[in-house]
Image 1 (cartoon, one colour):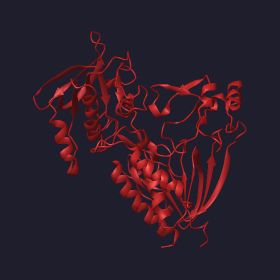
Image 2 (cartoon, one colour; image 1 turned 45 degrees about the horizontal axis):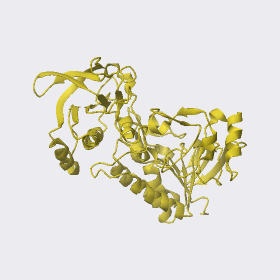
Image 3 (cartoon, helix red, strand yellow; image 1 turned 60 degrees about the horizontal axis):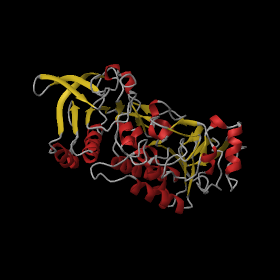
Image 4 (cartoon, one colour; image 1 turned 30 degrees about the horizontal axis):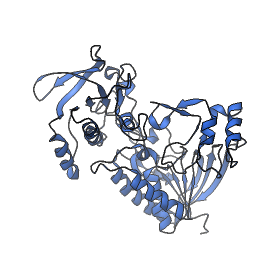
Length: 418
């Protein structure tokens, strides 16, 4: 086979997709990553810390970014999407649409275009909790480290001012969508996961009750690069948070929403309890759970967090979250199953632990694959497209990397016709 025929195309540039690409390329097979966001790293890039070591994720991301930059066998497209896939295992034709960034490779990330820009847009990295200029760097560790101009200002005088402010000719307002076609031996689908829309669980108050947020929002709230510079405050009034209720299974294990357990939400909440405890030494964290899923190597982490006298774990299904007018916080109500009593707790902030919905639940590969009732891929079927990471099942980061390494091996074998 020629080089073009032996490429692997990886859809999704998160931790799973990057792992597939670097493992395959370092084994000698050229890869192309297609990512819909303007940066690689996926949801891992939005984390404040990993569990159980409580270290920042950019250590691992930076290693992968460097491996990608240094390997000529890896090519990537951001702001891109797969339009069509035809063919069969070992011989696919893939059409990729690349949307304009309006900033070219001359960008030095100096920020002059943002200084010239006045329009603000909701910040997708921070789940809309703050706003950014319409000329923006996606986040402080973005890869590629280049600005983006939002389509909202293209064709306006403001966009022209951004271009005029750039001393390097990096702002290119004439960029148009382009289409490229690849002939590849294998396609790996690694489009990750989305947080469940907890506004559908109306009794938990998201979007209706002030100071109710989701676990992914809380992760950004605690991050130094987040909307408040890492200071955990109430969204309603900016007051420092001294008590948090972590409400587990917000829509999960519920036949009306997500019937399954995502497996990582308990550990994420245990981790997030350490954020508030570290930031405010007198603070209190309440974790309301159905069952704590912290098995195997993670049991020590659970035990460590549970040993904190200011962290209270209550076996409970929360039935209602409502505003508390007196404190300005929220009232969390439910049943304490362990004590056979009622839960009635006032806190500054309620955090809903939302489950993982596979990316394939919304956007499926153009070729036929087999799915379970929840949208997770169970088999590539006759199409031969190889799933990797959280499109197959809810996984924490380490498991996703392991699964992606296996997917890389399968993809290499497919390009060789084995």
